[in-house]
Structures are given as structure tokens and as C-alpha cells.
Image (tube, rainbow, N blue to C red; front, side, top):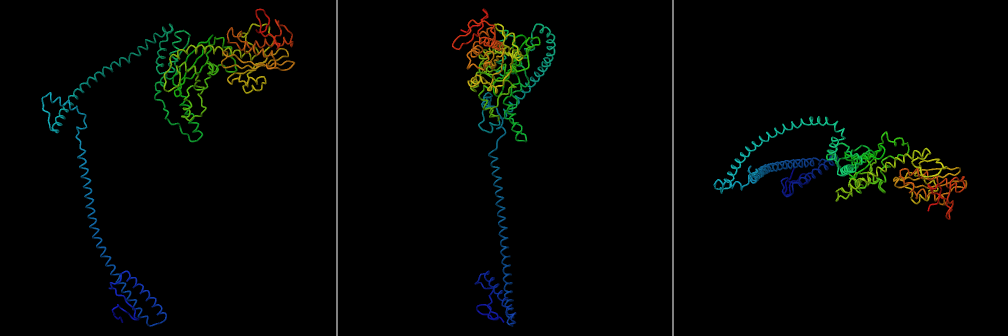
Length: 632
């Protein structure tokens, strides 16, 4: 039975039952306490049942009461949750309605702001038109005695009406002028058709007069073509062309000046590939580097499509053809040369296989002192080399010529200062004659040197190189070229090499002459400036008594002095065959040496055999009295 007290419900065994309607405790705490009591009752029930105690039934009743109480709590909780959910739903609907109303108001505000902005930004179409000035319209109104409206809108309407009227008048005038223009175009087309029919007739007329012009030596068509090409030359090459043409006309030197090249490329030069063009990009790293270098060289050493060709007549059917090219990036003129020898020229038979004295390097180097054309005269080349990614030692390829200093002067290039880029025409004019004379003398000198080289190789001396002399018994036994790297193997050259008497640009040869048991061996260094600069000859003589040089033999030193210093009598008739004359004099001096020292029977007459503290022999031949004497 359940007994009711002031404290609540109590079951059997005085177990306290909590009132579900109690408000003194928090609902959560009541629920947790009820669960705890139920758990304790279940544990107690298990222990009583295991012991077989009959009081377990009371505990079962208590557990059922706890279950009923928990069920009541659950129903109450669900009811409260439903009530809260319903109230939340009502409030959410109210919130959504208010939010929707707010968004509608925002959209209406944005729309109104846009419409207001459109009103502010409104512009009439006439504001964008280029109207006739307002002053002209007012002058029109005054001329017509029309009162100027004070209302701005009315004034604008009247002005636009007047503008429309003026535009209609202008349109009528335009149509009339267009009609006249069409008539003029038609007349021009008829005239063009007439003019286009003239060239065939003129060409036919010129062709009919070609025979007459050829018979009179007139090259009108060629001159016309050359004049047209000259208009596309760069200023540097134009200076060379005009100055050489003027010099030839004034002095009748026989120069032939032509302009060669592609005229179309010259016209389109401004449309050529720019510096910003990208180089090709190969796949492999090494080929990429090679491609970049080749591309840089192609741009840096690009030449103008046109070049100037000057043909200089030398002698006996020999002509020197000199080509002048212009490098666009470096702004320098390069030169190359070739020789033309006619089949009837006596020089045709004097060529031989051997050292190439006829190359551009041999013919042009040293025309002016120290000018070998190896270095670019423009100091900006180092910057351009870095710009195009080229090796620092990159030089101008010899295939496009060499940038000699005298060529820059001939082109009127006085310097490469960017602030002073004008050309000196006076310098160009003053350089023409030295250029022509230098080319002529150099070509003749190289031809004679090649001819002498052929004879010396075969063991003979050319007859043009003969000097006044008695009978010579010393003979040339050998003549051969000596590489520069082998000069150190000659002991008698040590002092000369140390003193810098040999240049790597010289051509060196070994000469050997014999008279009986005496052998004289020497080295001859022929400079690029030959014959302007004479050869250098150093000797060593071998006799039965031993070998000596100019350092320990006074007579051999005197012979070297005759061959290297006292050359005036050898060049009095011209310097062309100087080398052969030196070899001829060497043979004569060896004859004097061996006969004067008693190494061979004496057949020559000496006015005085020995002189001076060194007992030197007389190596100077007096052709008039036919005896040898000492040099004064």
C-alpha cells in the first residue's frame, strides 16, 4: 500500500517517492534522480531475488512507479517541445516576411538610384555633334534681323534648325564636288592608259639606238641603272661611289665604278627583320647555344644589299677589282679584292702554285702603316657583341671583307661618335688618289713577288732582278718557306727574335747559296708592306774552318749591312724586283767573301782587300771601273 505524507509518496519499506508535480526541483535534476532511484531499485531487486526474499515484490512495485513517473516526464517534455516549436515557427514566418519586405525595399531603392543617375547623365544627341560655332549662328541671326531668344531651349532649337539647313547645303556642295572628282579620276585614268602605252614605244626607240650608242661608246642605259641604284646606297658607300667616279672623270685614270646587288632588298631594307626578332629555339642545349651565336652573328654582321665595285687598271692587262660593303649594325665599311688577268697579259705565265700572295689579306694589309684590318675601328663592337650574346673575341668574318682604316676615310667616316654622325666629304675626296695609287703599286708588287717566288723555288733568279755585277760563281741551292714556330731552331736568329724584329704577319723563307765548300744559309722575312718596307735578311756562313754569324764575323756583319741597309742602288730602277736583287747581291757578296779570305781562287779585282780594325772585305762593286771597293 502507498501511504501519503507531507514529504511526498512512500512505498513499502519506507522508500521515498518523488512527486512529479513538485516545483521545488529543476526538471532535469528530478529526471536524473528518478533514473538513479530506478537503477538502485533494479539492483536491489536482483539481490533480493537471488536471496529468495519475499520482499522483492515491494521493490517491483516501486520500479513500476518509477517507470510510470518517467513516462509522465516524457509526455510532459514532448508537449513542451511541441509548444516551443510552434511558437518558433510563428516567429520565423514573421521574420521571413519582414526580411522579404526589406529586400523589396532595397531593390526599389537601387532601381530609383539608377533612374536618378540616368537623369543626371542624360545628354542630348546634339551635344555630341560638331556644330557650327555659336558666334556664326548669332551673326546669322543679326544679319536676318532676328531677335536672339532668351530661353535656352528655344535658342537651342533654333540653332539646331539652322544647323540642319547648313548641313543640307554642305551635302549638296559635297555631291557636286564628288561628281567633279569622279570626272577628274576618269580623265586621269585615260591619261594613265596613254602613258602606259608609251614605255613600249620608248623601249623600242631605245633598242633601235643601241647599235649607235655602242659604236659611240655611250652607256646611257647602264648609267641610268647605276644612277637609280645609287639612290639606295648608304651615305658611306655613296661617298665612295661619287668620289671615285669624280676622280676618274677628272683624271681619266681608267677606273670602272659599278654598283652591284639586289635593288629590291635595298628598297625594302627598312622592313627587314628587327633586333627584337627571337632566335630559333632548338631542343638540345648545345644546339641552342650554337643557334643563338649563329643568329647573333647574322644580325651583327649583316651587310647592305648593295655594294660598290671599283676596278683599278694596274699594268699589262692586270686589273684589281675592289669590293666595298657596308655593315649596318657596326657602321663600318669592309673591303675585299680580287685580281683579273687577261689571257694576253704577260703576267699570265708567271703564276705558280705556292704561297697565296694574291689573297685580300696579302693585297690590302699594310697599305697604310699599321693598318692590317684585323680590328673593327668602331669601339662599340664590344657592346654589340655582348648585346647579341657572342663570344668576346668575335671578329668580322673575312668572307665579307676587312674593315681597313683607309676604307673608312675613303667613305668619309672620321669617327664613330654618336653625337657627330656626319660624314667628311673632304676626307673622302682626299683619300681617293692615295687609294688608287696604293692599290696599283701593291698589286704590281705582289705579282712581281709571286713571279720571283716561282723562280727562287726552282733555283733561279729572274733576269729582271739583275744588278751591275761581274761574273757570279755562287749559286742558289735552295729556297723554301719557314713556319714562324720553327724560327727558334735557327741559333743565329735568337737575338733578332728577342729584339722583336720578326712579326707574325711576315712571310719567312730560308735561302741557301753555295760556292765550293762554303755554304751561306740565311732567313729572309718579307713584310706585308713589301716592297715599301724591304725584307730583313740574317745570315750564317759555314766554311771548312767552322760556322760563324754576324755576331762573331765582321765580314758577315758587313754583308748583312749591305743587304738590309744599303738598298738605294737596288731600288733606283724600281722596287718591284727587290727580293731577287737582294738574293743576287748575296751571291756576289759570298763570292767576295770566299775569294777575299782565300777559300776559293780569286778572279775578282779588289782595289783594297782589307780595311779597318775588323779587316773587312770590299763588298761594293764599281760597275764603271769593274772592281770592288769599300763603302765610304
